[in-house]
Length: 123
Image (tube, rainbow, N blue to C red; front, top):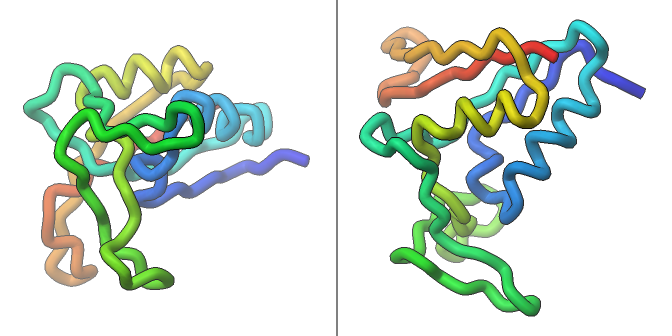
């Protein structure tokens, strides 16, 4: 089974091995499929920062732990394993995506009040 469109909004930062996640997203898309993706993106970072890793079934914090709100588990939120920077576009390309674009969104009408980077990529 494959999909013409996959939407992933603010999820990939919580995936310990995000590059494997990108490869899986690419695999699941149909031949002309499109990925719409948002991640917390820091325009000041050249390289994606790995904040935490899993080693021997333990979480190892490489930077100060960062948690994002989780509506299912209100106990401190979900751990962010990385903070994404410009090298993320290379990661998308290395996973097989083409025609990769980033669009900054802001809309009072739709309640998008921060700098949200929407990434659009094709298989």
